[in-house]
Image (cartoon, rainbow, N blue to C red; front, side):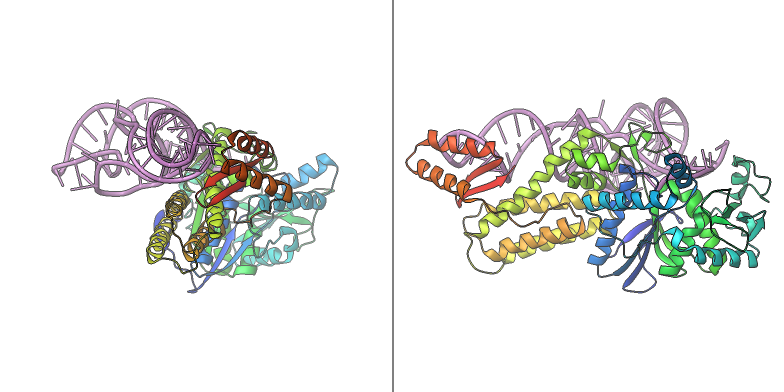
Length: 466
RNA sequence: GGCGGCAUAGCCAAGUGGUAAGGCAGAGGACUGCAAAUCCUUUAUCCCCGGUUCGAAUCCGGGUGCCGCCUCCA
């Protein structure tokens, strides 16, 4: 099976072919850490976490880099308002970011570089751009000559004429052209700053990704990804300056995910209609949030609603009961390997799962395959005779695809019951044996009040926590 | 003005030529002492109007509605 992905730059579905056969260099733009992240921010992090896991499943050795923008206008402004330092502010929200991501089951990137720790690399890049004639200094600011190369606009598909015509750029007399953008910004009095050949200042936004991706992943990335709103100007500018800097193509595949809408509008900090992860994960099972973010194809918009997430919480129970039912049956199953029939069924499901993911990372379809597997497992459980191998095969399948790749199935070990509860279950069984259903039901109700659901099956009593 | 996207059941949502995946909710049935869980069955004029085609949710043209990017934004 071969993976195909939609490349924003070519606007086509392309066969995924990294530079080196078994390695993938992947860079995903991370958060600007001046506040908590919202569910829209989380979409990109959760989705590309799945992409990374899937690439690993396919046998690639993935190097995943995600930056923190820990100095910029908003950080400076927020720090001033709160009477704290940019550094303290950034540290606080980096920690908050990891707490949110841990809850959502997002694995850490291999490297999480911070802009403020790569000032030298950025300055060196800026100097190279100046030396090559792609950048110029004006009164302590340094700007990139956007139109020096005639392919500016090739990522976001804007012609230079249109950009010029449509440029509603702030009036900045220092720029040669309104489309030029800052590589280095002169510090205002009292602002955080670093020394440079052009005076004290701080880096522009775009140069950090160019410098850090190059340092950790090399001149050409296999995958560069982020939200759709980063396509222009951020990624366009990154690509322009990186290619001017190195003379090589910057990224082979550009992947951009769609927004989360509130009603019909995009969720965004500037519109003020955001819902933060830090609050949502108090209200809902974090797994349900993760499922919600993966329930639509990544390039499509998804509408946020509490109703949708509640529905998903119900759906997740199907995964959990399937796992619990398979495990319960292990106690009474026969020794033996998986049946041929089971192996064939699981191979079929594997094929479907891969087909979904290989088709531009269609997580919505991949999830539907998970449900197919669950249904298939439950059907098998109705058979009177089963081998442990067959049960294990299903559990392994669910672990691999539901847990390790999508991160939606919780394969945590079974909890033990305490002795008192076990005694009650046993007492109920004895009551049932003598058809004292009143007593039996009373015990069941009592346990239900403690959140323990009993289920009578041909293989004995099964229980689970609600 | 330029570029792009979306419109599928009560709700979420997949699906780019062969008469509609999956989930939630609802209905009926099986199983059960009763339940629960599970399984089976069931619920769609695919926004509208034309066109191409043996055949279109899917392609083309024209509408309608909504949204995004072109400026900070995942």
